[in-house]
Length: 70
Image 1: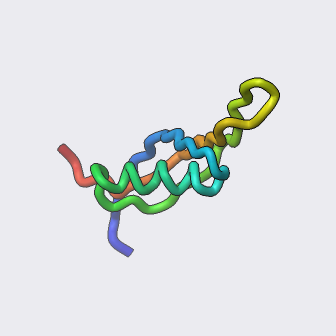
Image 2: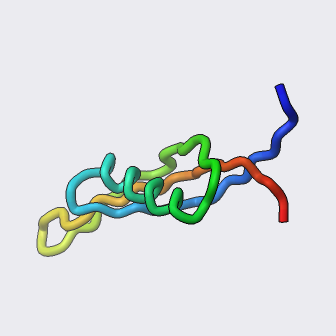
């Protein structure tokens, strides 16, 4: 196996639909500007509540990508 280095970033995705969609939105948006995304871990799930109802789902992710240097 080749020697590689991976870097982690934290992302928070939001959706009015579901936690799964919130996580997907975060990864899709990050992939537009960060190359070689590898693995995403869901660290936290929470909800936004307004007037007694759920208005948004939020997923906090720890995402790794292959580090290629400066």
